[in-house]
Length: 67
Image 1 (tube, rainbow, N blue to C red):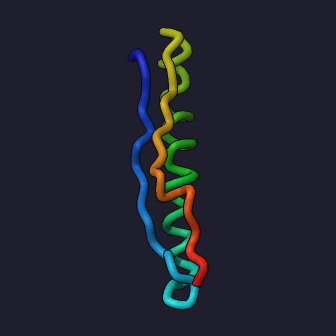
Image 2: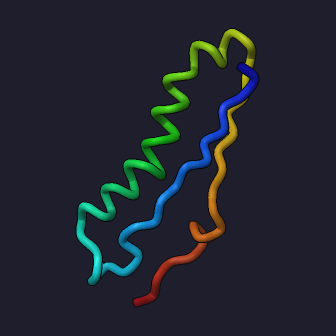
């Protein structure tokens, strides 16, 4: 194992008034906790081979809704 690439992401709850709290929780579950879980699961193998972790992000993360 040379590396893992965390590249999953979802966008729910873009507009506060149209979204449920569950939408925001689902987004956090995938976008924030998903990479942490995957990395933690593969840490033993990554340490054995001095592997790398690559975290990908979308440019949409730079923007926020003003409405």
